[in-house]
Image (cartoon, rainbow, N blue to C red; front, top):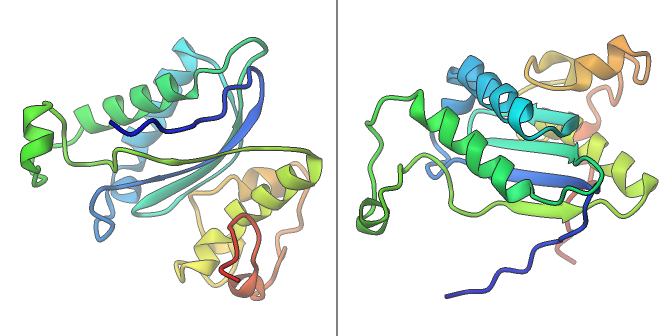
Length: 179
């Protein structure tokens, strides 16, 4: 079995990308209230701070901070995925492997996680999260996408409503470059 290396720092901030198994689906935005409930349910039992988030139809980007002394983000993701999945009808196709393990076929098994190194890294990932709907063509401006912490940042006076304008689609923040 593959031994995945994960960061293991208590109280740290992490950036995650979590995808649906079938990226042609729009379950996350179609069932946004169920996803919000899954986050709330998990945060009540295992607190964490959502610093920035964007929910797109088929994937989520989120930056969160764990409490002092706590490093178990895997437990939180398992709970979020489970609670969300339980609220959906059992209509997705499942591989033989998933059937043997009693798994649903809603989420990709793995997710991308990145330990935030410093304030500049934090800011780059917040920007990446907020520009992501523009990057993927879901909105013309960050302000146009409803399922984003961008609106919380605007209300708090941390970003102007016209932040990034229409320029965001070409940004290269938050991801590795191919060169």
